[in-house]
Image (tube, rainbow, N blue to C red; front, side, top):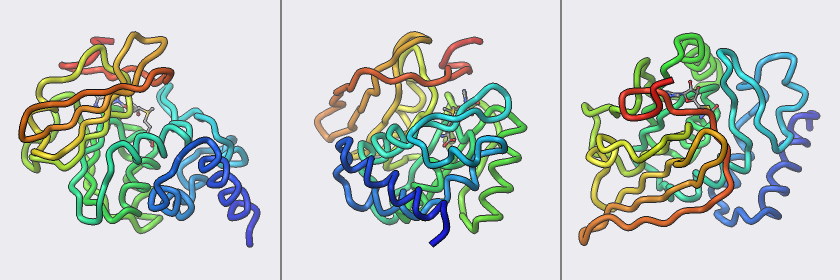
Length: 212
Ligand code: SAM
């Protein structure tokens, strides 16, 4: 077993102890090589439960946050999931390990190109798009789940419209310092909403996000 394999196993154990209960999510996180998504000189820290810097002033989210958001979106094999904020591509890879059909959008060209290379190198089949994800990806709607991995001032209306019945939208909402992860479910009776406080994401910048 390599050093990274051992560290990844320990990370998954920590996630379990921190309250992640969905065994399928834990299994997926045990499979994805986070060190492939982290640039030097941070690779040695890939299995710490912490966010790490990416290019363009962005971050790869903390593994706990990735596990939490994945658990909340409750994906099944074959679910069609739209992610806004590809970043390194790590979150998308976790969803792909869960056998979801993953569509992901990134607004920073450098990250978009790097993530595409990583997906090819690691063998992930994920649909990528460069642009403003606040307006979604209408061609493939409706989605079983929409996950936004950057913080918005309010829920983008367009994303709600692209959520199928039974689907969940998971999105951090708040100011630029601190946010709550909001989980909206589209039920036949209408939308339900709950939220969990205490997260910090980089801003969602776009037509239906922050303007800078
Ligand atoms: N999910 C990523 C990962 O696994 O590495 C982490 C994403 S990082 C916390 C948030 C990303 O959202 C950044 O890469 C940022 O450029 C991107 N972003 C911000 N606003 C966006 C928008 N309107 N459309 C698409 N991507 C956006």
